Amino acid sequence: MTNPLDGLAAALADGSVEIVDLTHTLDPDFPVIVLPPEFGQCARFRMEEVSAYDGRGPAWKWHNISMNEHTGTHFDAPIHWVSGRDVANGAVDEIDPSVFVGPVVVIDCSEGAARNDDFELTPEIIVAWEAEHGSIPADSWVLMRTDWSKRRGADYLNMADDGPHSPGPTPAAIEKLLARNIRGFGTETVGTDAGQGAHYVPPYPAHYLLHGAGKYGLQCLSNLDRLPPTGAMLIAPPLKIKGGTGSPLRVLALVPARTGSGENA
Image (cartoon, rainbow, N blue to C red):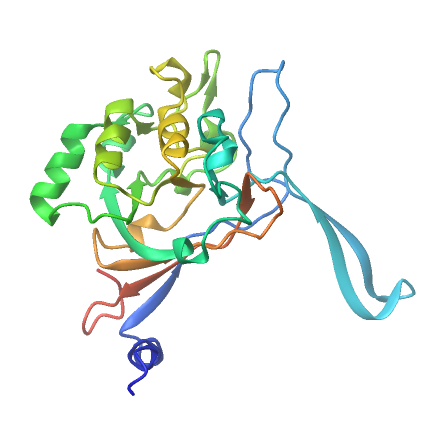
C-alpha cells in the first residue's frame, strides 16, 4: 500500500512545500495584553538560568521559565471564556489532536489596517473574499492578516487614554464565520478581538462567540504575509496542560512554493 505521507516528505525535501514559521520569539520584552487595573494581569515571559556547564551542573545548561498561558503567540481553548466554560473537552489537554492540524485561509486586511488602527473585519469583507477565492471551507482556520506583527514595543499594544487600539472582527463577522462552521480564528494582534472590542455587543465577540461555539483562537501570529489566501495547512498544537485555558505554542504553516521562485504564493 502506498504511504500517503511519502508525497509530503518528497515535497518538503525538494522545496515544493515550504514550512513558514508564524510564531514570535518568546522573550521578556514581548508585549502582553493589559487589562484594567482592578483585574488580574497576564504575566510576561521570564527565563532564569539554572546552570550553564558550571558548578551548578558541569555538563548541562538549562533554564526555569514562567509565563501566563496567554503570553506570546498562543492558543485559546473554549474554557478560556465564560461562554465556553461548559463546552465538552474545552481544555487544551482534552481537545482531540486532529484539531491541531488543518486547512487555513487568510483574509488580507492589511491595507485597511494600515489606514485605520481600529479597522474592522466585517461580513462584507468576508463576502468579497469569498467572491474572489470561493467559499470558506468548513472546519478550516481563518486568519485575519493585518501586518500588525511588524510593529514593536508600545506600538504593538497601541495604548491610548481609552485603552488599546488595534484591528479585529465585528460581532456580525464572527457570526458569519461561525455560519461557515470554521475551526477557529486567528490574528496578528495581542488578542482575537479588536483593541476596542469591549464596546461591541456582545463585548469581545471573537472570544464570546467563538468559544461559546466550541471553537478555538490563535493570536500574536506573524508572517501572515507569507501565506496564500487558500491552500496552506496549519500546524498549531498547544502544550498539553491539564485543565489549561490556552498555551504558548509554535505555529507552523505548510505552504506550496511558487514554481521557479522559491517563494510562497
